[in-house]
Amino acid sequence: MTTATVHHDFKGYGAYQLSISEKMIRQRLIEGLKDLADKNETCLIKARSQGREKLVSQILSVKKLIGRIIEESETSQSGAVYRLERIQPSDEEAATDTDRDIEKLISESGGIINALTCSETDMHLADRFVDMIAKMNEIEKLLHKRQKIFKRMQVYA
Image (cartoon, rainbow, N blue to C red):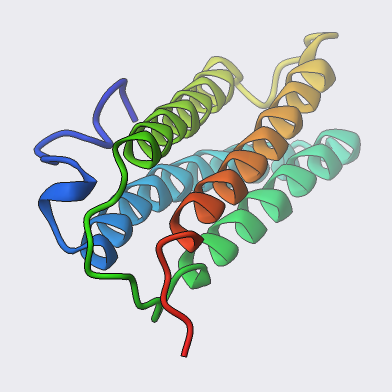
């Protein structure tokens, strides 16, 4: 995922029905997370084939975390009903900034995985996976922040 792709051809949250625009951007973020999961899986296969148990354990931790984030993202806000009025400019700006922050972290995480051969004997390999886990945790926090922004616009029956 490259910078600013999440909002490419997106006219803003106020340009569409809120349920459609929220889902549109959420799906784009999920696609980035799924690409990251695929890269992580490739790394896992390489590490397993070389019998690198400690590395496999770290990769599995990242895999589990990415999977949880994807699952939560796919189910969050599904079926939500929003008020008819437009999203407030401050909320739209907060959502857009949060989307960009999430996208940046996904991109940075992809860069970490791309830089790894996952078969190297680099002493800093474990540190890179610790960094990945920290980025995944930050993505999860930002997704929760994003959910809170949209929950303010929901209608509860």
